[in-house]
Image 1 (tube, rainbow, N blue to C red):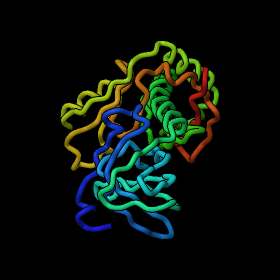
Image 2 (image 1 turned 90 degrees about the vertical axis):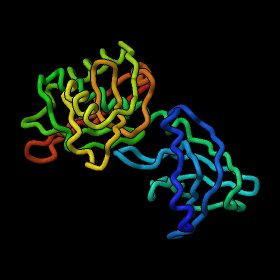
Image 3 (image 1 turned 60 degrees about the vertical axis):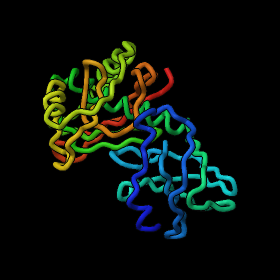
Image 4 (image 1 turned 180 degrees about the horizontal axis):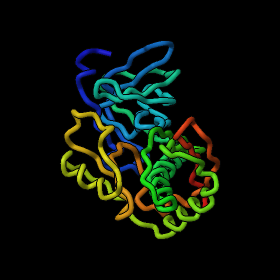
Length: 253
């Protein structure tokens, strides 16, 4: 990938519309690395892996080429779309069409929003504000690692019930950018903080389940929590002294 292409940041269309399934873009660069290809576009709706959320998958189609996108990552401000094979070819500067694997993306959106909601459900049931010391999500499940002494096992049925009661209220999910100082005060109202956010981040993207929970987040989310469908707690496990892991998923209600 050329230095000039690397210096151009990819416009992130998923921040403007997380429901965008198809988009047009221009190829900035094509590179080959470790037996795979990386396509850099001037704009994209593909979410690159980060913040515990996996990358989107899908297809990129051009006039003379087509590729299945199996991964994506951010590299110096540019989203690199990874494919193991290009059928035909792509040329720098050509127009392409990107198509998101919507079923994959939408389940990630539902699970990611559920992760935010579940943190609040745990707080409501236990009456405690637990630090989240680890997290991760995929299409089949989400995990939260919580700083907590003792087992959450006996509380899982109640946590699931509270989460589903909240989902039925179908509150909106609001996303906005805030200056860091304002964001710090805002999330404190919801027992959250920005202490894990790198100090160079001055404008913060806040995701709020209206009046229930808010935190800094760069992921994709549903518009209303009713879209989650239903919460199903899968299991809990101890991850060592003082750390409880719970796993759960969004399922069709």
